[in-house]
Length: 44
Image 1: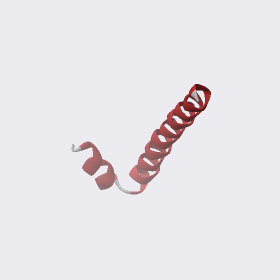
Image 2 (image 1 turned 30 degrees about the vertical axis):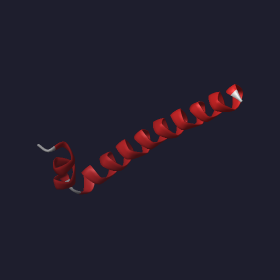
Image 3 (image 1 turned 135 degrees about the vertical axis):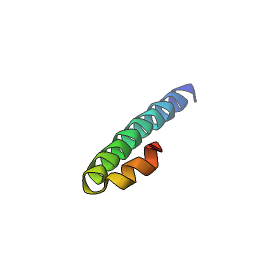
C-alpha cells in the first residue's frame, strides 16, 4: 500500500511540474502575440 502511495505522489509531482512548464510556455507564446494578455496576468 505504501509503495502505491509513493508512486501516486511522484506522478502528481510530475504532473504539477509539467503543468507549470506548460502554463509558462503558454504565457510566453501568447505574450509575443499580445502584450495586454501578459499585463493582465502579472497585473502590471
